[in-house]
Length: 202
Length: 183
Length: 234
View 1 (spheres, rainbow over the protein chains, first blue to last red):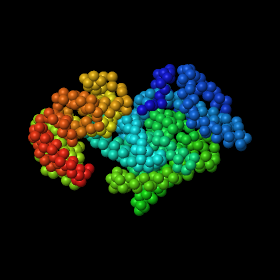
View 2 (tube, each protein chain N blue to C red; view 1 turned 90 degrees about the vertical axis):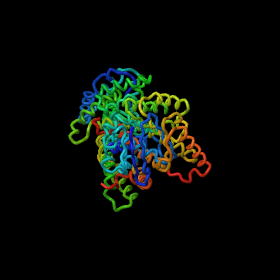
View 3 (cartoon, chains in turn cyan, red, orange; view 1 turned 120 degrees about the horizontal axis):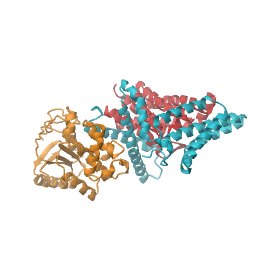
View 4 (cartoon, chains in turn brown, green, red; view 1 turned 45 degrees about the horizontal axis):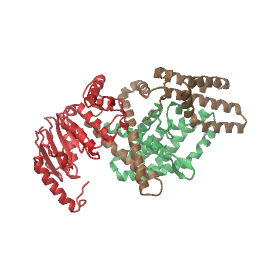
C-alpha cells in the first residue's frame, strides 16, 4: 500500500523522526496559544519556505494535501465576513493552514517504519499492562497487509453485484464484506497458530 | 490471543476499506462514506473493548501516514484539522456502541445495535467532534454544533443500517458476534 | 512419521481414523466435505482430537507447539489467508523468529531462502504487488525456511494456471521433507508412494497410488453422472 511519504527526497527525510515529532507538537501548541495574526503570518512564511526549499514537485504535494482544509477555510471566512470580524477569521484560517501544513511536512518526510519505531518506544511503558509494543507493530503490519486484500474482495463483490443488477452496489455489499473479514480472521489466526502464534516470544 | 489480535486488525482494515468504496448516495445529493458505519460495526460486532482497539489501531495507521481515511486522507495534519475531534471520538464511539449492545441484552439485537450506534456513533462521537471544531475554528460550542448538524441525517441512517447489518451478521455467523458472546 | 488418530468434532467429521505412515510422499484424496481439511488440521496440531491421539514424528503437535513448528509445516490453499506481512522478507523471517532465531539471524536466513529459489530481489517486495502464483511461492518459501520434517499441502494448486502449477510442482518434487498432499485432483498424486482415500470421514481405501487412484476416479465419475449435489455436505 502507498504511504503518504513523499517520493521527492528532501533534506528533512534525514532528520530523526522523534525530534521532528517533538518540535511539531511544541509548535502546534504555540500556534494555538498565541492569538496574534503577525505571529501566524510569520509562521506561514517559515512553513512556505520549508516547502519551497526541496523544489516545485514537493511544493505541489504540500498544496494538494491542503485541499480538504479549503472547505473549512471557506466556511470560517464567510462566517467572519458576515459577523464583521474579518481579522479574527484570517488569524484562524492562517493557524489552520500552518498547523496542518507543518504536520503534513512531518508525514511527507518520515518513513512509516521510523514513525512506528517512535510509537514502539512511546508504548514501551505499557508493557507493564500487558500490551506488548511488538504485538502493536505486528497488528500494524496485519492492517497494511489486509486492507488491500479486503479492498480487492470488496471490489469483486461490487462487480458480482453489478453483473446481476442494473443498479450500483450500495450498502448491500457491506454485509458480505464484513462476513469475509470475519472468515479471513479465522483463516489468518489459524495460519498464524500453524507457525507458532504470538505466545512464542515474537 | 491470535484470534483477538487478528480480528482487531481485520476490522481496522475493514474501516479503511469502507472509507474507500465509492460514496453512497443515501439521500439525493448527500454523499456519505461508510467509514463511520465501520466504526459502529466494530462496536456492535466486536464489543466495546475490542471494537475500540480496532478503531485505535486504524487511527494509529492514519497518524503514521497511511491514506486510509475516507477520500484517501491520512497523516498527522488531520489531528490538528477541524475534524480532529471526530477522529478522537471514533474509538469512544465504538466503545459506547459496543457497551450498549453488551449491556442491553433485554433488547432484540437489531434494536440494541441501533440504539448503540445512536448513543455511540452519534452522541459520543459528536461531543468530542464539536469540541474539536470549537477549538480549531475558534467558535463557541453552539456555533460549532451548528456546523455538525448537516451530518446528522446521514449518521442516523447509518445507525439504522448498523442495526440491520448487525442482526443479519448474527444470523449468518452467530459465534462471531463477540459483543453478545458469553463473557 | 507415525500417527494413529481417532477424531471427531461436533457432527462426527472423522470417524475412527487409524493411520501409520512412514513413506516420503503421501497423498490424501476425497470429495468436498469428506473430512480432508479436518484431518489436515489434526495433523498439524491446530485442533485436538476428541478421542485418540495424533503423533507426527513422535510429537504431539497440539500440546507441544514449539516442537510442532520444527515438525510440521502447512501450505494453505489460499495464500491470502496465509501471508501475514506486507513484504516478502518480513513474511519469510516471521517463521524463523518463531523458531527462536534473533532478528538479524532470521533476516539473514530469510535472504538465504529467497536466494536458494533465485528470488533474492523479492526481499523488500510488497506481497500485494505479486501475482497469485508468486504468492504461493512466498508461502512455500516461508514454510521451507523453517525446515519442518513434514510439509502438509492443502489443495496447493487450486486456481493456478498450468505453467504456475508445473513450476510449483517442480519446487515441491525437489523437497527433502515428507510431503502430505491433500487434494481432490487425482492427477497430481500419480507418482506418490501412498494414497489415502477419505470418504464421509472414513478411510475408504489406501495403498499404492495407481490402484487407489484408479478406483477413486472410477467412483467419482460414476457419482458425477448421478446428482453430485445430492449428498453434498459442504
